Length: 124
Image (tube, rainbow, N blue to C red):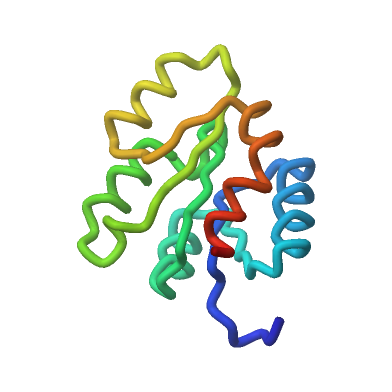
């Protein structure tokens, strides 16, 4: 993938296991992906018109629920689907993400097992 290619997927994820799974699945599906560890980096990458944003709701430095609200409140980004994942016992966080406008909230296990299908939707 050329370096100047805008990523099709932006991921606010720092867990090495998940970054590795996402990267490998994207590589197999020939999908370009960009990782962002801060709100600023995520918004900068999102300005390049991704087809999907993935967020780890347990990544506290991103303030993911506020980030979802901000992304969905931005007219240029409101239509970009957001898929988030979280520990299954975080029911309040799941509900908060849904209320903020997250399109899909999955447990970590469901996200991991469904990753080929999630990214496959981006590939076409």
